[in-house]
Length: 165
Length: 393
Ligand SMILES: [Fe+2]
Image (cartoon, rainbow over all chains, first blue to last red; front, side, top):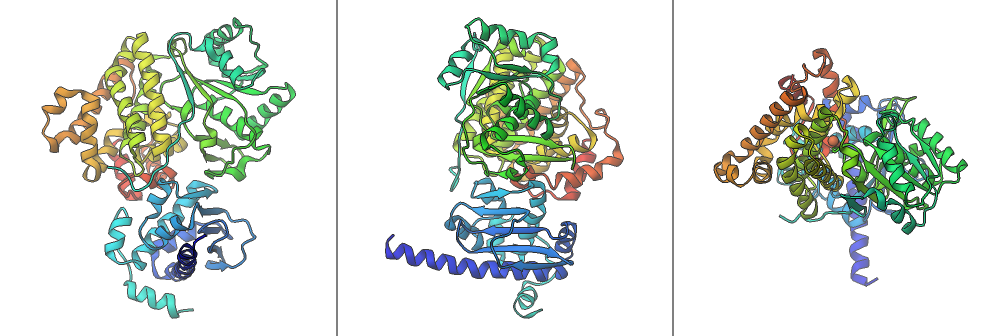
């Protein structure tokens, strides 16, 4: 591998880790900040576990619902109910940096989806809502099919993500 | 417009037309198969369709390993395991599936169990999990002209215990050979020809307009729509050989198209209607398609307008102003619905299909969790779907 490729890949991995952290925090706090997210997650079964893997051995995020809370699982060796594994880090990076929506990524076969597809739909709706908070409108206009009526301001969401609980 | 990225695969070999069935033994031999397990259903056995295929195969001095015809209209995991066992006991080395969507999906399930060499396929649910596995030669012979299952990378299998429909999407599900022969759709009842034809039309329209349309899937979708526009009514009304073969081809091409570009809102709601109210798939498609198109109109009306040329022909297309073409396409489909209704009694509204009004909320709830809704170009939530259902009632 060329040095340049190595550096870019390293950079993409590091940025992905940060975005995934924000995504996790956003799931956690939007559960009590946004009633639509709350409604969706309430429907998930107890101990429902969802993972996003940026590539085979790349950065990942595993979310678990337990005791009406979203927790992060740091170990990579448990089986999730739903797994979204991107076929390449670059594809994952497109999505994590707001250049590709989840729906489009799915349509483009950018990831392997393991599990019950109908269960995954609720997760997709949550990600769409969270993206409306995390990304500015110029981005969400491109990647989301409809404008979401935010219940709180993005700034408030970010404040909660960074400092709350 | 070329999408930024797309994937496409259709590796199934197509045999279509005169004496296609007679070529099955040669195809099997080329796939190194000697003892196929032959899957079909009781109806096809009773009306003699099965015998026609057996004759065509046996007269080439080729023997079928074992015949199994107890396949009900809903594929079920337990049955699949049972058939896989029979396959092994009978030392079969390949599969022939003759039937509609259910028989072919069952065969896909059996092949999955055998090629992945595991009993419990529940862990393989989802999109693109399957690896290539052990190769089991697989010939599919469709007897309806609608599902396109003989060329799709999808299998839906019922899990009776938990009452869930397991969905598998993988290019490794594609049959090796699909055989289209007039003798197979000759006996198709008019009403089924009508409803499955409308299903094929929905596949093509949704494939042409959904999020992952691409130049390859477009080519198949357009050809399918053209054949349907020219042949559906005739194939129902007169059942002529040319029209029936054309519809079988249309259905297959629409299958190739949607297998790569996926289906959208019409199917999401249709699947839910099937699950909650047991409306047959083709009937649901026929009822829903204009209503869903109207809902999507502001987002993809232009693409619906492009379809008009293929569905209704040059004259209608050129005589319709550009901005009215999308609506005209819907109008043409509504007229097709009327005609099919007169010819076969195919229901036009949900009410006619025996759906209870109080079930609509449950249908809407299910529809928004269907995988097809994600690739619909326009967002559709619970309220939107409920409104569409009420309009279609
Ligand atoms: Fe369909």
